[in-house]
Image (cartoon, rainbow, N blue to C red; front, side, top):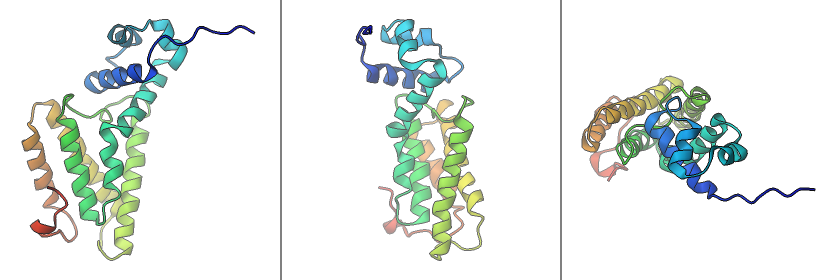
Length: 192
């Protein structure tokens, strides 16, 4: 049995660099050669570890969702539906206005439409709970979920266009004035 050479690079570093490249440029504008140049790891090593650009993107996406994009998971734990929506849109404003402008999930890479749809479904389920608890009434929870995510995606596009973090938070606040249910008083808001 032949034993292969041990990996000569930090897998986490390659995933981190790939995540940032895909986030900044988009899936179509990044090649394995770009990742190779940025990391100093030869293409053969990257292909041996990841198999394809698509597989590398999927690993980079998981890293993004566990890191910068984790605000979505945290938002779903908020006690009220309004706080969930607030955490989603303000989390988006913070994430997309950082070192890299925009959102990795707003694009046309393979698998992103499915990921966005899963997020809509999870958010709608959370809003279904709010309806069952009497917090929201007479709303289409799927539509409200799509609205919240559309606001976040719009914030991402505005960030790529140069809007400041303060402007993005102002957009989030303005969007939330159309919340279809009770809103907390300013002293009850979950946002600092």
